[in-house]
Amino acid sequence: MEFIDVWDFEPETDLEFYMKVFFETKPVLFPPNNNLTFMEGFVGYTIHRYKQFQTQLFIGQPNAPVPDHIHPNVDSFEVPIHGITFRHSGSVIGTPETMKTGRAVYVHRNDWHGGVVGPNGGCFLSVQKWLTETPPTSVEHDWEGETMGPIHENSL
Image (cartoon, rainbow, N blue to C red; front, top):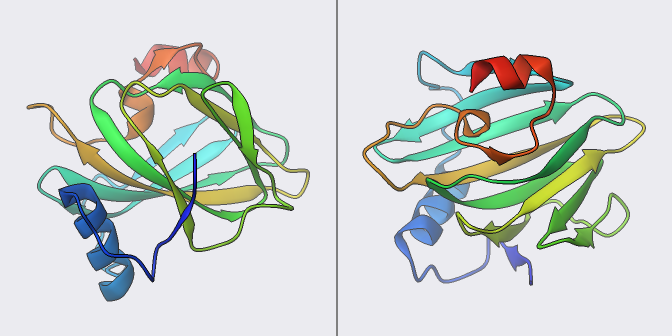
């Protein structure tokens, strides 16, 4: 699994094209109405939504875990910003020391992934394409695997 530079690549898929446009236009000032979610140790902020595409910013409290899971209706790029250890397919592929802002990793709808926030908190962007007739909401609602806790369990 390799990271790509979100500002310097040639998109080949519609999801890559959307990510490229998002980073070039920075639409953070025009979020959709249902843009905030709260989960065990995390706040999710939907920065932008266009049809089946959206970008969410997730901010985690110190040491907040994210169990390995999949999003069966979402393909995404995960873009670390600060303080995240990221797992993909059972392996740690990035830590706060090795992850660089502006690098993205692709997560297919069937790719198991998870992570943990560092001791000083952390955040990452999730650039998404929702694949079915399901309108985009927040990825913690499209989840298979161990939940993050009772609040998450009750929201599914």
